[in-house]
Figure (cartoon, rainbow, N blue to C red):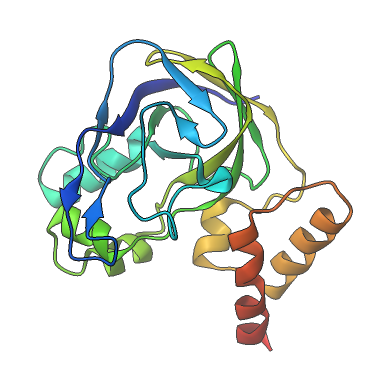
Length: 216
């Protein structure tokens, strides 16, 4: 199975005023030293300002890969340190965008997390980066990272190993479904969910009708 390393664990540093509906944003995540508790709704001490669109059990953790951060650093001409994209976990050697929906990761010695869905870039993210047309650029590149739900609570810290301990055979990755979802993907994922072999994020299932309409 695939193994990688947890380079950084990031949680909110401070809330900032934001032009969005919530009025503030918690996207300013920064690395923390030492062990951090992981609970059902994410990292202990973390917060989401806009809970209508962020957070919840299906989006408890957001992971982003170092190789994708380096891609953006080269194109932006500036560093992309852990937490800049609002991620909780900066990983090395792990496919985040390329993770299969439903695969499970063992993080450290206690935590098990399950890949659920892609991050959808928003206007708050664009304001954070202060880059023109950032949402469009980030979406077009398709390197969007993944959300995870917490299956087993515990403690994690930078330097922990990450191991894929289970990977569904359907092969539909987070990135594939984000960038090129098909009616066949919807039917496959729906059947697995209905058969009890996969637990899909509620928000992902709500997107299925849109995909089916587009393919009809």
